[in-house]
Length: 287
Image (cartoon, rainbow, N blue to C red):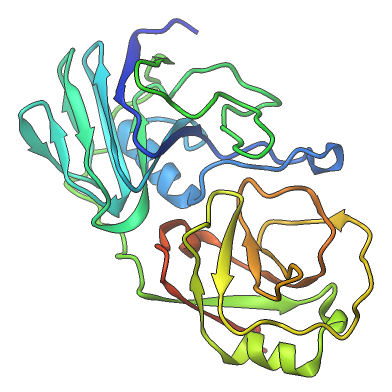
């Protein structure tokens, strides 16, 4: 593919990574899916600039970033509530932004939420690994997290920007209600543990990341105290380490784990914008 644009990273921020929709189908070889923590947001950003939904963009975490576009192009930003500047003028999230060559695009710190997704017409065209350009922060597959001074190639645009005025996304919720299906190791826990999981509130810990959302709250006591051989882990698995505090695995989760999994969250997308201290409540599936 011929590159017509490059992105120069002026300020990478706390954690900015290249993400697409991930690399499914490799878990049997120990490779997690990875990809954008909110695939719907990345798909929307890509549609706004005329990209295929699976094109790679940037996932920007909490503190924002600043990049320079070497040629005229179109970008879109979806996700957290942030201030955007295109050179000296303010920009909007949720709409295509046409930028002249040399424009410095600044995405400010998140005022609400945690992550934003930046799509560029043509998509980020770093080399694919196992069919994906996603950065996997646990295994190290894909490009490294961005650093100041990095330059990223951008592919040739394949479509026209979307003819929309503005697309508003939902505001991050102060309290998350997550549906969890119990098992496969719920029988390793006491009845009191199951009551606590489904009946008390937890909060998101500051040590959460793309691998998993660590929760703090009522510990979940075990009925079985023995060791568990490592077994497969899936997206949304709620693993309970020795301290009894649940951990919800996210996009960069390992493929195996040695602590019991009490249940699996059916949709982890809301956790992409969950700041430390956000309240989390678990509910069983509707019958």
